[in-house]
Image (tube, rainbow, N blue to C red; front, side, top):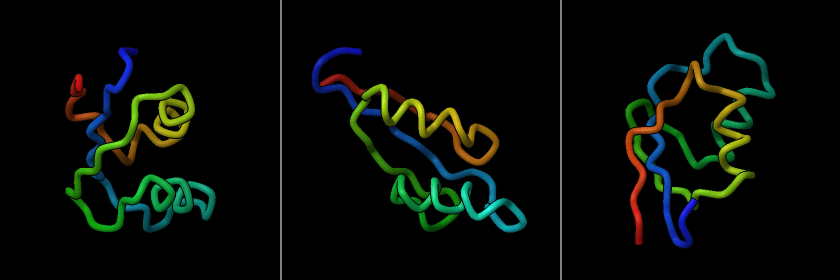
Length: 65
């Protein structure tokens, strides 16, 4: 992980019918609508959150700053 790099995370599958815990994880990433893309800092904490819901989101890119 390079200093200052970001992850682009895309919300690809609805959280309807998923556990409340998974819904909270999606919201904590700042995702509200399907196909929305957000940029988050590439840290171990964010990577861990992303690893909890790989069936709902997709990493579409990684940018170096």
